[in-house]
Amino acid sequence: MRNCLECNDHFTFIDRFKFLITGKLTCKKCKTTYKIKNTIYRFIYILVVYISCIFIAPIFANYEGIDLRWHYRVIISIFITVFLITIYDLIPHKLQKYKIIK
Picture (cartoon, rainbow, N blue to C red):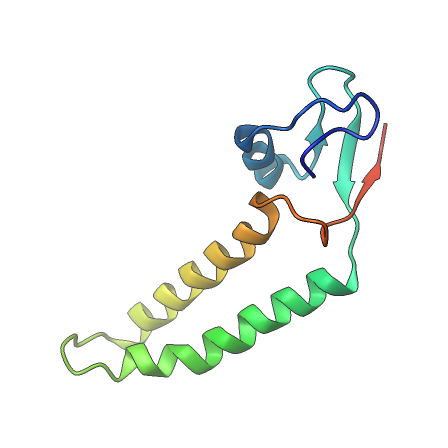
């Protein structure tokens, strides 16, 4: 969401980043609080991220130049998965739907 639905105030990148920590997006001007609605688009995106990490992880695991133990590979794949899921919440787009709490 780029703008507040009530007062049309612009949300900054830092506001959306705080949303990742608190789980709520609050407008500075009118104090309206929003929360994410779970939609089919969010489910599909997360499913694609998980499946792609499952199929891409063996490519990095079998790279001959770097010798990694299995637990390092798991940690790297977890970081990649978390990073890709947070990108979905940070970038404002039309597929992400919000509901007003207050």
